[in-house]
Image (cartoon, rainbow, N blue to C red; front, side, top):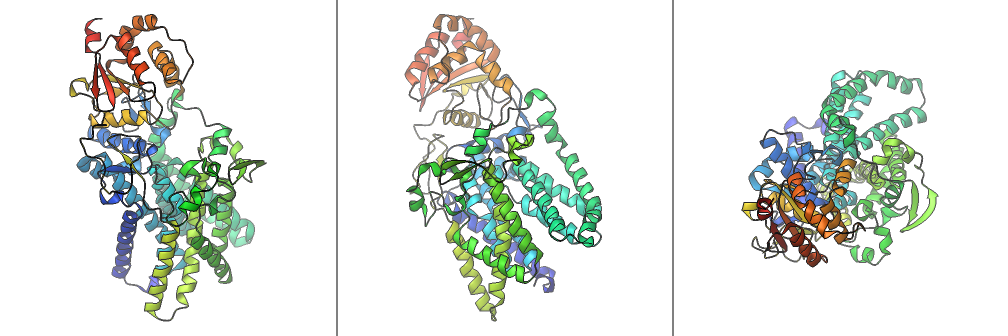
Length: 600
């Protein structure tokens, strides 16, 4: 029991648990974790955006600039990154890695560390509830390495930075249990919520809903004078928490709403419906599951239309253990058994989104939480399936209660250790996704075979590199905006040390004025037509006449054309409009505009 242990023993258990979770983080991300500098962990996509955020954060802090803004893409605008969850918490924690080892190692080690921290703080929460070290370890394992967490680790570092969520619940539980909770406890709660905001805004909504439903359910189910007085007893620490959060969040809030032009357009109802969990999604494993991946790949592809955002597999072992924990916890009259069970169901309903889907088929039936998605702020929820994180945390709590019952039935210490090891191994096998995908950093946007732990060589001929003489001003790249080419351009910018800006770029939420100005430039409109993004007519003569003005407006130093189906057409267009000479650089063609500048 934690209460009977010495302080030294408790600290030793914490350190050992954290080290084991870090080792498990390396295990779950094999083979890429063996060589963290060779490639980005995860599928090629959003992982490049988050690696760019880590690089930008370290660069901005080093130069004494505000990391919530950038002029490095969407030039000539200075755009806010605040709406796109610019990873300030992960960026701060990764700062030593970023400065010493570069963005690839920083991203990969950050991902492994965040998985371990989510498991560790999940363990601390379970330990407070179940009061059993081994059972709490199993609960932390069930949360930190849940299928939801592992799915998000394929590309969403900010969502994997989930350790503030159990930390918030831990702080709130401390306030609720205390006979006379102080405002200092409220400050700690506010700081936990602030960490959640610095990780990802979805985590803030998750924390607030977790606390709201918890308190409402406790009062409604046990409507006694004592329960009613609970709200009167905790209002002061809750007020202190709110003030602490608002004071700390104000820089981000100002970056979001200080300039109304920076507020992006919310995602539509169709987007919310697509990125929702399926009714039976908690039973469908991911494609790269070590045991059931082959079965998953044989299923209807429409089931996986939401990609890794829609992977909410709960796990057979976790569900069985959680069900057992709920049953036994109710027998013990453990309030967290009923509480976690109810909250797990609520977050499951929220994850289903506004419309129900069954095995990939829309049912045209409103979901249980359809009214929630009519609220204005819910339009920025982005992906309802992400509420499955709340379900995963509640299942982890129930798992710890179930494990506690099983372990405490064993008389000998060796028997308890053996059973705990067996249960942990089963939980690991039920979530393991090896080999973990990796993305090439020499040819961003490409995934390469996982058979080898090493990535492509540094001198890979496919690498697109901008000559050092052109690493100034702004670079126009083609194709515009669309992946994987936008990843290539942002990664080329990192490789060039950030000495040049980009005309395009990628943000989860972009302010509308960026695209309005973007499409008002003739040459950009024509290039988008060549790419097939628009059907605007192309007038070569008019575009050639506007070229000097475009060069001045965008401060262009070069045009880079990546290999794509429209490469030949785009190269001919750039040469005709700018009169620039071409030079082949790996998998791209670089047009220097120095001559075009001199002819103005």
